[in-house]
Length: 281
Image 1 (tube, rainbow, N blue to C red):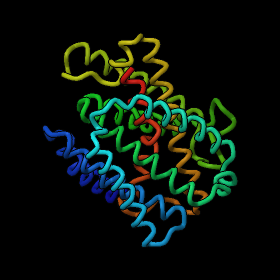
Image 2: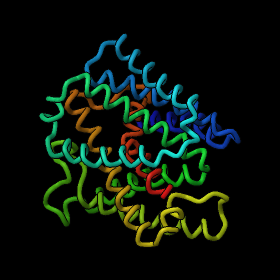
Image 3: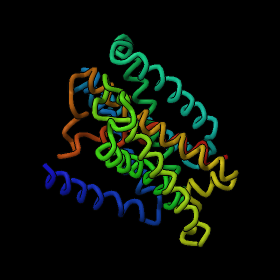
């Protein structure tokens, strides 16, 4: 299993990194459309859609991305969209985590499908615009999620159950602990200060999301990083809720050893528009 996981990660990086570093950001945008379409296909499958309907949903999502691309939305200021999307994630995320599987199951399938497609489309817009803003900005957002996940995993393994008697969300994801969340927060804060220091030292031509928030004030950067890390946990838990409702472990088997595309980008779905909102003030 570990060997398969590593091999899949190597293949993914071999495909992802050349498009990220390619001088023209459109190469990354095109790859992101493919990944988002795959995520839409998984989303339809999670909502008990058949093969034809799932492919149609994937095609629809890709089509929306391409139409918005041709309409010039990647170059347009979209701060209002990022704000509305971020607010929706905060409100709906809190409602879903409070209501659980029962509340989600009561939502009509059509609304679920539309909501998922919209969330994936907005995530594509955000990640494509982030690449246009610069590789440093894009990676600073991606690494925030990776650091939060890694630090949470090791903190949970080392300290889980020692300081908090209750787990984070036992009915949705029994393995997650409050100790892990605290470890993830510490990790992203450390990452933010180190990354911003490197930006100041001139290690990158473009500003990272941390430098952009820090330009408002150091306190704003700290609050922003903690908020983003919190929403990464929300994204992860919300996707776990969706999978629990569907009775599956992974969103698909597209990425051997890793599950599906949604399993890899769940925390990024709320983070991307929020990072664009905070990083473009």
